[in-house]
Amino acid sequence: MGIYENFFIGIGGGTCAGKTSVAQGIEKRLEGRITLLKQDNYYEDQKNLSLEQRKDQNYDHPDAFDWDLMTDHVKTLLEGKPIEMPLYDFERHTRKDKTETITPKENIILEGIFALYDEDIRDMMDLKVYVDTDADERVLRRVSRDIKERGRTLESVMTQYRETVKPMHESFVEETKKYSDIIIPRGGYNDVAMDMVVKYLKKCHTQ
Image 1 (cartoon, helix red, strand yellow):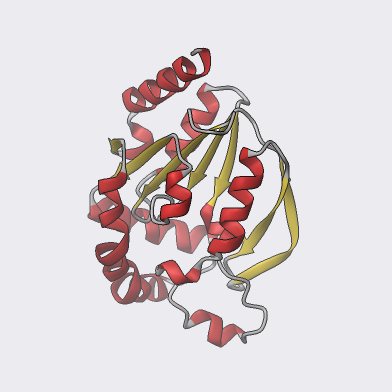
Image 2 (cartoon, rainbow, N blue to C red; image 1 turned 45 degrees about the vertical axis):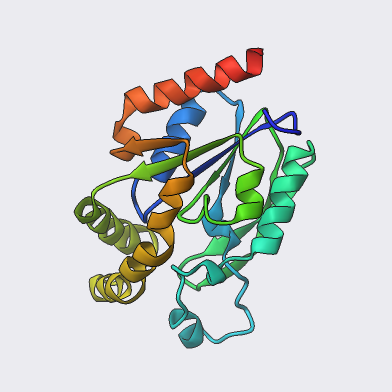
């Protein structure tokens, strides 16, 4: 473990690779010993822009995120203090007016496409995980999720994938694989890999 008492895990990978499923799988196995931070909640606040302007933003570029706030919140949790995590409205493309109080537990997970991207945040991690899933499968999952959960149309999802998701993945996300300690194929379907991560975490906390 690093300089903090809490164990900090980053779970990165492409859109809809299964990062959330892996994080939740680990959380379920550790029964309440995980604090989960979703990077998607740290998109920049865009209340100063019109809805049409918000729709035109590139949400798959690192600049779409509030790195200062994210870094500050990670440090605060690792210091054993609670945070007020922002909540993001994906239909309005901006933050909600309310926040969620997050308290630190012995394991803290940051999950998102750029979880392994920022050097300052990465240097605080005790374990770096990259979830690697076939691109065709990720596209199908993305279409289903964005239509069902985020109020998008099929046309808008496919346009966004072609114009920003795919090129940004190739330019920024894929390269973060090289920073990982563990690569998990098939995401949340890989029970063996999640069991191994949990076993490793338990071992670290007993040392």
